[in-house]
Image (tube, rainbow, N blue to C red):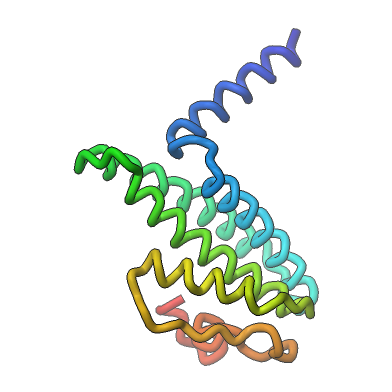
Length: 165
């Protein structure tokens, strides 16, 4: 009996969340998979670099939840302006898929796993599409030795300037 009640509550909660996020389509599935992969590869990279920090891991999880909140807000914006197609939702999903994907690529680089260039290229193009930019943003990831900065945020953190991070 208790298992049935628990299953019904979980089922109801996931249904409400899925509806709030605009449905369980391919873009949302990719984002969720990349979020989980980013979190796991980030933990692995922290272990590899001997920089495991439970507070950073906690706030990383909170940031993932806030991203899903932004997706829900994008859906509301689509409704507000009368979009029949979920334009803002799709742009937000593209943006966060690209960011999460690039973060996974960075984390994999930190733990020594190289990826084919076409994956990195697709993620960079997706980010450009979401941001409306045309110039490619450089990604310095795959051939960096351990302990060196792999992104602008890491470089700023290494210098002590974390205001931009």
